Image (tube, rainbow, N blue to C red):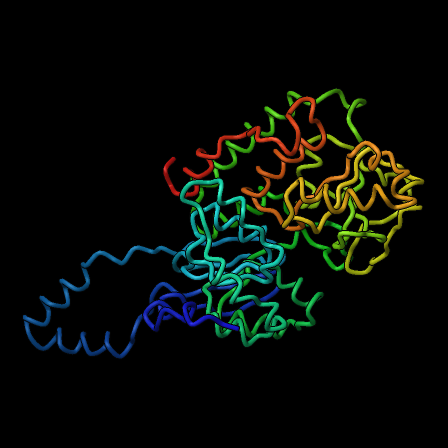
Length: 409
């Protein structure tokens, strides 16, 4: 359902932010910076030739300084180039990764909703002074609640949709004419589905997390904030990587999904596909326990699952289990890990016996999420170096992150 608090701002804003045209992979012109009126010009000429006063007035008008052109363009696959007359004031993301990017750039207050609130985790913002989002707005305005219908796009009346339109076509049955209609009548799309790289339909460029983040920074004209985040991130990752043990001493990791507290079957993920949802594991230098097994990762077309017997054949050093991000580290151990320890097959796994089964991180992560998840992953994988995952050790400066978000940098 659409919250009244997110109704359009009114004709003046919409008249300024006008969008026209949409061609997949081509150019979208979002707005125009001015126009000439032939009838008015002709009338002015007639008056100017009639009296000296009119001539003087016309001369003054002609010598006025032209209005500054504030338009700019952003180019991102699959849509291509999109031109804006002004920075979008109202926006929506499909997933939590792009939502987190907007928050990181100081645009959290102008986010009108999200594709699905359940996988947009905002509790880490509580550790950043002055950083928050309105969960009521997010949860009241979920595109998924309206079955991703075009009607909710009209009702929310955003200035940009930060999502991949090819995702709408391949996941939700949209046609290209639906994408064109919303682009023409509401606002354009800017986004690239990049959390995994295993979908056959995604035959165009992928972006890394920071590659996509840079494009969103261009969209909101917040390049300085992006550069500050990028510098912080690079320093943090470099510092962590300097402390990692040698490659041959690092664990291999099995990353799977199962939402139950008593899981029996698991959807596998491959760490080697370099999707943004695996960024922390790649940065932390672990190997994929599924390498060489012939088991493919979860995708639109591959929904296969593995069980404990298959896991036992692999016997990974560490098991990372997704879909438990509302639990604390201790709550996860008291439920999921305890169940596995009592399961007749699961209890034979080395990872279970050694207590090395952990929460596996978000499916959709942005730059703020990634800092926290990399810190958590470092503790999960290398507790002798970085401290136990249930401990309070902090590996990056929360205040510095908050200062970037709030503009104090």
